[in-house]
Image 1 (cartoon, one colour):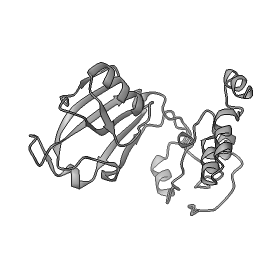
Image 2: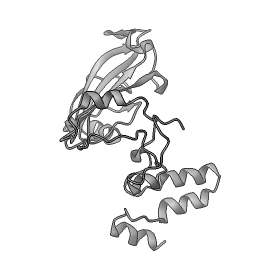
Image 3: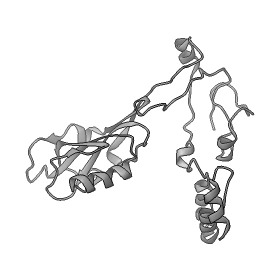
Image 4: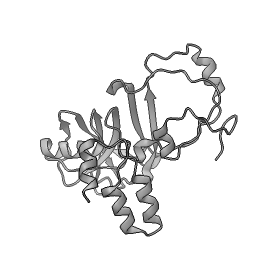
Length: 223
């Protein structure tokens, strides 16, 4: 793994991060302090499509442009629950390409089945029609995501100097990829790769960590 500056083990890395295999900081200088995600608006995500889709959209459907492309704006709800909410309140069944955070304001693209694609608004979402494409969009059509992250109450004021000190940032998979409360899904994945399916199920259903709730521990320990 390439790390900017020095490859050093840092004892100040939180225990829960080390449990997931994240044992190093990418820098050896002081951070700026503060906190993120104090409110939904502090974390904004914009999904970006490749030019194959973004530059070839028709406002009117025809035999060539027959796939509706929708824009889903949501706040305070993850993508999977947004899909359910839209179906329950609007009757529109949509499919999204990427799963976006719950505690955030996010914008992403979606497709829908049938002809009910006029969009609408629910408690946490707004769905609107962008146009029609030649292709049914899939994950390969996502170019990436653009983030806007607000840091509340930083303890360091020389932000411009801090930015110049950063050279590279390792592409860590954070705790959201492992299940931040129980932190076992990376262990489940390892057993699946080793084809130890029984052990994978045991870990998923029965293993506990100090981050489990007391109720969760009691249920899992009965197995």
